[in-house]
Image 1 (cartoon, rainbow, N blue to C red):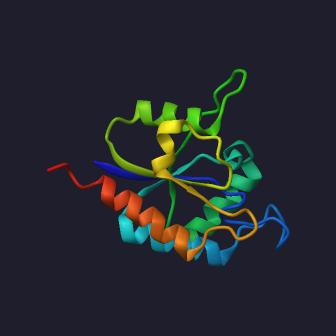
Image 2: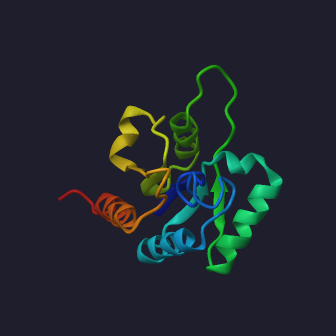
Image 3: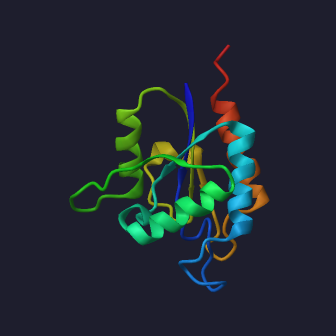
Length: 147
């Protein structure tokens, strides 16, 4: 069974007003590395960065520098009022082997049932140690079978 981290970039690995919207922070990538190493979770890109070849290439390079890679990306669903949560649910529906997941995002357009799996980052701070600790808790607690 797989553990999965749904990763947004803007407001998670970069911040608004500090270093530019399209700059991936080495410090925040290191925090993500700590999360991946602690949980052995797979990275699934849910960010709109998946739609931009140049940004995606830069992100993959930053991740590779820390020994990480993207396992997969969510699909772009077409239609009126499609939310990030719907795209994540579509991915989960196509991958039934997921035992636990966490969503790292600065936007809260998730489905109601996803909120227990959601770590809402501050877009002006990005991924923090507290966010990482919360994500570890979510991934580890969900992986424990009911007794």
